[in-house]
Image (cartoon, rainbow, N blue to C red; front, side, top):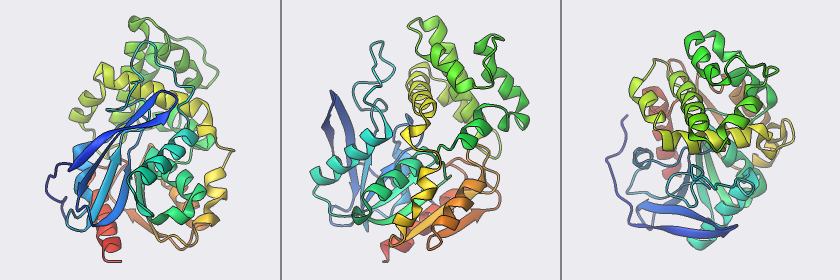
Length: 319
């Protein structure tokens, strides 16, 4: 099972959502098809053309957006005057509702991977009547243990050379076991000589560890300074605040999803978001199907992950 052919949007624009923010959105596929919204990862990753190909263009009306501060949305988090105080999970949930209403959609399939799964869960638990189905990949709920595993030592035991590069911008300073907090000062320093190498180290760590086998092209793409700065600043801002969730909130509130059909796709060897979180979500939401892909890491680009995601969207297109 392969990706659907490349497709271009038939409509796009910038939606004013308040706080001086304009959100880029686009639609592709069949204007009369089943509505679906794709939520990108990061936060701060932005949408790409490739993800349009996860949906049958004859059967889906696909809405994509770039969340606040990244991609083609304005203002961009890499700008010197970037202010992230109005960039939180709950601002993004409200943005999704504004976009749904603006596009004249009553209910839509919500698709999210990695951070996108976090946002999808937060949105669906707040607005379950507006979600027809959920397709989630690489489950991430910002529990403290998840953040500590990836940024404060656990995953570094598997990637010691990349862990060393990740810690290099800290210059050997003591950070009390909390690299997320230590990085905040560097990423928001106004001096490019400070924030640029920190941003590249932050994003390179992620790019190097999310695939089952290292993808040098992905690492190079994540090392672009402008992309890296917005991505790293937004991620760090969200992770430092725990996503503005109470600890364990998304798993605890999963009972609100009971009437929503769902598929959870998880790579067995996902280092960024280990499979235990997908398992915990499945136990709290047992009506969802859990698909554990045996030879895959975290990234959407993994062939086994793509196969199962397309199988899920095809299944829901058939009703």
